Image (cartoon, rainbow over all chains, first blue to last red):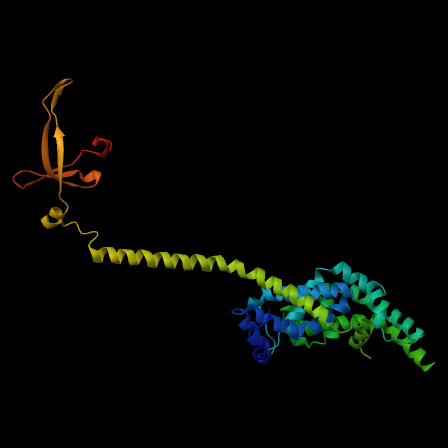
Length: 196
Length: 141
């Protein structure tokens, strides 16, 4: 199902598109076409590839059902969609913990580390980072991941998580401090290997 | 490299979704959109049906008033138009087996509803209405 006038729909911004979807639900399909890629890529960093595909679908079906509570950020629906995707991830904590805890088999095909040493180093970095991230509270981890992998600003994260940007900035700063402390050894180790 | 960049490097994104993946997502969304429609449809249908019935009732009532369906003032001309002349054989019985000889009578009468009884016109042209005390009092037809 597509809007009757696809060209017309592509000219609308996200806010207008969602408003139209109340009279013409098919218009929501254009929002999926527009934002499926970044949402899927965000989820694929936090979950397995299969789970990411499933959760991306879930994100858009939930967004359609909840479009009455849509919170725009500068005419964009993307932060709001990231927020819904983050809620979907929260319901899959075990899956997320598995991804954080160990190397992911499904990543081998698209891992661009050619050198075996680099691959081992990347694996070690990932293991340490995963452990440090797993030790954060779920909300802090969500904030860090939205900032790191979705590359959202504090204001966008605040829109995504329906909170205020000051709280987001404080929690992000505190969480990054913890990660920095945990990773110090790893950073020093990598520096030494580069100079050597 | 800061921590955020390190996380991006350590947790790389999967390649971009292909056309098939996008199509699967679109199909699932379409199914949800379709399923969402009937939830509102019955109320819309019920409202439309109620409006249609209300319009029909209003129309009928208007027509009935306009044609005098509820008008209780019946004129003599109205009654005369409904008069029927009937011939009956009448035999008056005082008791079982004690009856007068049958005689033929010609009467003018207007048949109404059971509850309204029968309106007779006597030889002088006056109307005589015979109304039963209740429907049960009327003989079975």
